[in-house]
Length: 533
Image (tube, rainbow, N blue to C red; front, side, top):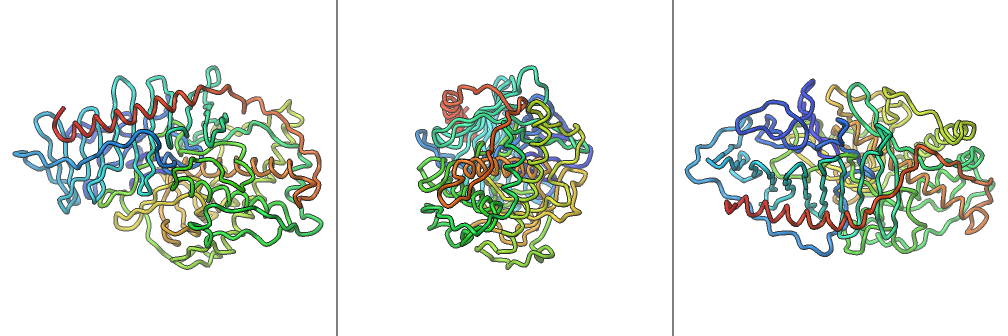
């Protein structure tokens, strides 16, 4: 059964690996970097180009969706192409048809006769039921640029260069650039610019049962005693003022901070939720992607795109989606939530808080190892089970826009602050898909109790960003210890992790060039789809 990942990757069937766009009428597996048609209503799925190491794209906080509205360049008007005149249709399994003219230009329609896709030798465009292009891709001389349009006005641009460098823009001045670290096989460095702040983060590639994923490599650990303080009760509950929440008009009913904090881990739970909701709010505004007024500051690392060599995930398309992988159903055992819930259930929030405690304990263990290992904690073996498949890792907070496909070709979007639940015994299937259930949702997100499959890489990436946000929260706790109502703490210290260091790239100039590449790609495909090229 096909599984669409959070970054738009497609694994078609067991043992067939990645696919690229086949010639008209062909269905052979080839290399990543294009698209593949699969049975079931003429749906088409985009496959990322990888990162030069045979790995899928890696996300930083979720996927390339969920950026702020683009400033500067105005998207090109994208009109749905017409059906080529005089071309005999080729029926598609499950309904719909494909039309290919003598120039090799192909138009695909769904069972209702609506145009859902255009492609030629160098371009792909996919359209929703209103005829708007939601995903486009242009390839030239080893360089591939993709542009994704979200339903909230978001526009994400990704360009992958022949040397494996990848640049992703969430707006005119926000995004990241990443490339493999020279002399360090399997390591990828990403330089991110968000809210005027530039940071570098490092990830390492792994493979579990032939499914590639990335783990975040911390730049620093704190001293073990500080982690112990974070995971222990305070002497008395702390009342903390988070300040104004600019997203209140959108998500104020969904999230209410605890009235007081008997333990630091509950404070960190609200810190991460608060941060992710601000990310979701920023994606709706023309005010940038950084933290808003009243927030304590960004987590230690960056925003995410959900691919570390990754192509952006597809937006929801009417009648263009994945094969059914699940249905709305009952809530997972122990997680009693209503199907239309728009307020975060206390039981779900408790799951997140429990995950915070588990992650902090794991960080404390790694810190103790690093303190006696010259700043390095032992790396897991290459074939190690991903953290997200461990029985005690069951709650996942979404940190960027994520597409789910379920039921009878239905789709919906999750955004930062929504919550997924994985049963403790649920593991990756042969295609790399992991079954999850929505247990926390904001207005406009997937309904609670929708069950679907996301890729192992996507789920691990959510965990990566959760860990990075926890690191940022602990940095704030360390800075505020003994003031602003936060109790005194042991010296947090900092243990530098050599493998988590990498030089920064000139990300701002690369993002500016990426905007130009995106504009060019939209212009090209608008011209090609109307037959004027």
